[in-house]
Image 1 (cartoon, rainbow, N blue to C red):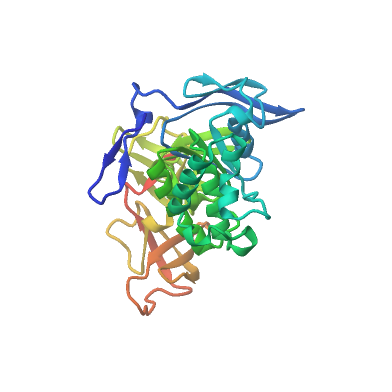
Image 2: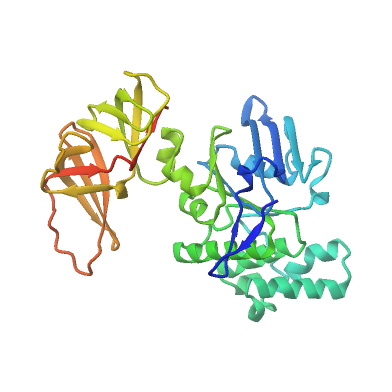
Length: 385
């Protein structure tokens, strides 16, 4: 169980239960495989999710994340393996008897019912007494801030309001686990961002375990306690958003989350606290402040995020280590950032980001300038695959 700890800003943080061997997982997948004929949608996945987590399944279309979610809901049965919820094997439990609710991307609201009736529908089907239905419906309507829209029908609501009705309908049954399948896909960017924080607040308030499927890296990074990055039916890495972004375990994960520059090279020196890599692509020696499990001469790759790089017109003190030379090929102005595409002397194209700290920026570095691109030894991560 994850323990809630009051924080100084009145928000709650959670103990990282997955790091505590004494903690029991709330959801456990044991060697779960799902096949459709000759096609393997989910391939031998084992995964632990802990109580009150906001857990994301992240990956491209067709990677198996929605199939995995549907197996948690009971709409699909594993070809092999087991799924346990709070210690109970779910293999013999039909969807309607599982303490689980699933919120679909389409929201699936009844067009002829108003907000209150849409939310109350599942409770009525379960035979909950009318006074309790009213109390619980009022509670969740207040939670999702739809009091003034309670009598409206779905066609009278905005996309964001319909999304909140669907969420309230899922929450009103007080499930042990809420499954969300691309729940914000139909919203515009501003509303999507705002709704992400609303989801986080509701999850904190209810303590329900949320499992969300998304292909949106920014969304997963924003809402999640942990993320499982998937590809071709397998989980490639499971970690916190910070760990996934800063310490990816492969080029696939590094490339999937945000922009990244990756340079191939060979290990020249490998010590406990650093590694030196000769890279023709970078055109320099790369130093990283961590050792790796690789022999001298082994092929490795170094990932450096664009925002961790610096661009200058003058050479640094050490122009041979973590220093690349090239020409400014293109510049993109994004308001808060300027994005530089630089063609290195080696022919490799790199991307770096520079914060626009002043309101009006007169560019000191512009198109076709010869520049030096540098980064700190602790800014890159060495990847073995």
